[in-house]
Length: 152
Image (cartoon, one colour):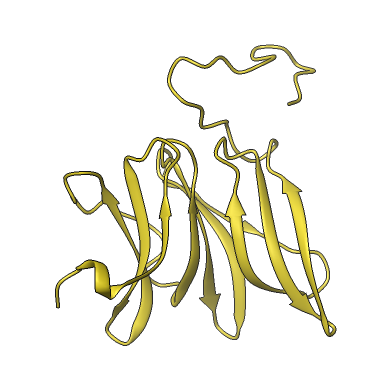
């Protein structure tokens, strides 16, 4: 099976336009595919193969961070893979809402997660400044970098 545009769902493009994430059907499961643009070269993901199916991918500016929803047993979870360090960050949601979709800010400092629970739909914003370094366009300084009290 090829990876043509008709095989893809949920496309997400990094802010700089160099990384494309999309969901494809592989071995009967939805899995995220990450490609460098415009070459089409597949980019490795270290932790996501065993956590399937995947949905709702979202990328930071340079594609360092890939946020998406994964299935872990009966639970759907929001996770972020840091492609620079290889770490997988699981995002615990307070209460027991079921995440439906998400969107990562381009700098990787905040995430919006749409949830369903107790008969209500919500969109919640989460601050990731304590978890992730900013992923900024080349040449942009990080405000307050190097000071202890720096907060965006």
